[in-house]
Structures are given as C-alpha cells and as structure tokens.
Amino acid sequence: MKKFHYSFITVLLGLTMSLAACGGSGDSGEDALPDDSGGSNEAASSDNGNGGEASEEENNDDTVDTGEVETSVEATGDEDTVLEFWIHQTGEDETNAYIERIDAFNEEHDNIHVEAEVIIDDGASAYSDSINAALVAGNLPDVMAIDGPYISSFADAGVIQPVDDYIDEETKDEYVNSIIEQGTYQDELYSLGAMEASVMLFYNKDILEEEGIEPASSLDEAWTWDELMENSKQLTTDDRYGLNLFMNEGVGEWMTFMGAPLLWSNGGALIADDGSTSDGYLNSPESIEAFEYVESLFEEGVVSESPSQTQFEEEEAALALGGPWIAISAEEAGLNWGMMPYPYVGEQVSPSGSMAYAVTSNAENPEAAAELMTWMTNEESSTAVAEVTGMPPGNANAFESMEKFDEEPWSIMKEQVLETAKARPTTPAYPVVTDAFAQTFHAAVLGEDIEEIADQQVSRVERELRKFD
Image (cartoon, rainbow, N blue to C red; front, side, top):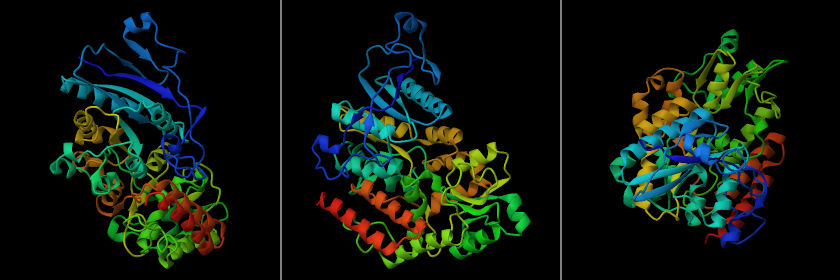
C-alpha cells in the first residue's frame, strides 16, 4: 500500500515580500498577494519538528512524529507523475481526513503519486505568507489550498491556471453554485472546494423561550431587519446583549464575510458585477442604508463593540451571527442552542466562501493536478471534511448522503448553501475591496460619518482597479 509523504511547515516570522517582488507594481503594499492580517507578509519555515531531517533510524521505523499527528509513510518508488500538494490545516481531525483521502488517491492511481505538505495556520497571515515565500523562491507546489475570495487575485497574477480543459460540465454540476462562482474568474474555472461556509443567526433556546420569542425554522420564516432589531432590543438586559457580531475578530475579512449580505439584501454592492468600479456601489444609497442599519444596532446598545471570545457560549448574548464553528463551541459549552437563517430586508442572501484547491502555474502535468483537485473535492472527500469540521460540504451530492442536514438545525445551513449563498466579489483588487468594506463597516460601528468614509474607501479601490486596466 502506498502512503503519501508529507511534512508539516510551521510558518513563523522572518521574510517579508509582496507581489511587487514578482513583477507587480508597488503602492503602499496594496498589490501584495492576500494577507489575512492586513499587515506585512512575513514567513519562514521549520522542518518536521525535531530540528532537522529525520534520522536514518526514524526513517527505518517508518513513522514520522510531527508533534501534531502520527501517520505511517512508505517509500514511493519510481512514479510517472509526482504531485506536490499544500493543504491548509486548522485541526488534527481535519488533517487526518485529508491524509485518508490522499492515501486513497495514491492507492487508486498507479501513475500519479501525491507528496503533501500540511501548512499549519497560526490564525493570522501564516498561510498567505508561506505562499508568498514560495512564489518568490519559485517553488510553488502543483496544487494548493487558497482562501476562496482571493482566487481571482492569484488567477490575475498568473499564479494559478484555469482547469476547464480537464473538468467536464457534468463534474462541475456536482458542486454547489457558490463554489463554482467563487472559483471562476473571467469566465474560466480556477478552483474547487471540498467545504463551503455560511453565517447563521445562532440563538439560545432557553433565553428565547423565556422571552416568548419565536425563532425561524426555515428560509421562509427568516427574520427581517426590523424583527432582528426588535427582538435584539427585547433580549438585551443589564448583563446580556441581544446580539453578538464578533467584533473581537477585528477590522478584517470577518466583517466582509459576515456583513456583505446586508448590502446585497438591500440592493447594494461592494463593486460592479463586471469589476470595473466601486463608485456608485460601495457608496450607493442602498449600501449606505445597510451600513446605517449596522450603526443603529450599536446605537441601540444591542451589540457590544468589544465582546469576549465566548460571549454567546457564556450566555452573555442571546443571539450570534456566526459561522458553523459556533455550533461546535456552543455544543462543547453545553448550551441549548439553535440556528436561524441570515436576516434580510429585500433579497435573501447569505455569506459563502472557504478554502479551495487550485492548480498552480508550476504544475508540469496540469491534467493530473486537476484530477487530484477533483478527487479532494468529490462527494467522498467533501463528506469526510464536513463530518470532522462541521462546515457544509462544497459538493452538493454530499448533502444527500449526510442525514444530519435534513433535520434542524443543520437543515438551515443546507438551505442557505443551496439557495441563498453568494460569493464575495471575484476581482484581482479583492484585497483592497474587502479592506475598504471592513473600514466602512467599522466606521458604522463607531458612529462615524459613513458616507464620507465610504467615499474615501471608494477612492482607494478606484486607484487599485486602475492597475488592472
């Protein structure tokens, strides 16, 4: 039995670089490859955890102790095609799911062998930094995980390549619409994802029952903005907030992921559909009205500007607009919880987007690389990842084989992913677009002049867009 060779890279501090170092133009660093932290791109790598190469005795023992997980590794021998694969890791169970699926791929394919590196995410910019470091050094893998909203940035920069020639329409139809939307740039498909994401309105069942508030149990019953405001007011007491928006996450991607549907639902947008301009979109009357709604939530005192990390789990907030991971933390806290659809005012829209796989420009055998990409996102892989992470599957067929998504509260998540999910804008200027949104959202939280801030941020985006004319 063939087992894939893998190593762990712990990305620390050290090397600073940007797309400008690879031929891009520089303007206050705004054209750097995606940096989740909003700061400089810093990276370095370590080995397998024991300070150097594994000893001969360790290799003969055929077991690698990475400090995170243990798995057997057998010699690969001569292979027709060897694919280097980078996986983004956030937990040991998730990593083990990837290991099992790659082992299965290697068993199934006689002429293709995968050698994978599991990149440990430190919760900041580590994964993006490791990609930037490899890009400058010219040693990108054949296939790598990329945060979905940044696919267009990598595609425009020529870091990844389209895969339409290797993936037929029947295969594409297996994925939820938002996965294809997220992975498409200029009408070409660049990525596929095993998992999706969403944001639901989590609620404390005991508190809502005490207050006589009826939760929504389907998309048809989703709360409107007015209902969210009224109920949040009723649920707010001297020692409890009505709603948690997780402002502790800071001014960054979370605000865009969680907050963009407020604009979309009201007819607003971050940027034009064709990506040509942000003027008249981020600062449109419809968008400003959505930001003003955010402002009103804080003015009414139903949301905290600085909540604790576990405000909802500790029953210091009755509602929480959060991702699938809240279900796990609420369960671990012993909370009697439920989830409702994302609130709306006009069109029902919900957030989407998660890590996806793409074939890099370094791949010498893109057809084999695309085969790996589809394997790691097929029904079996998508089901395995969903089961250990709690995230909804990116492959629609996986929903049919996972019974939990047919019953509340998980049926809410399924409905959103299949019916209301919308990908964040696909534009090479996305790093600046998302920061512009987050800065405007934050201005609303602080009660600042939203129109003035929105106009300032639009000017930033317009300058960035001109680089891609």
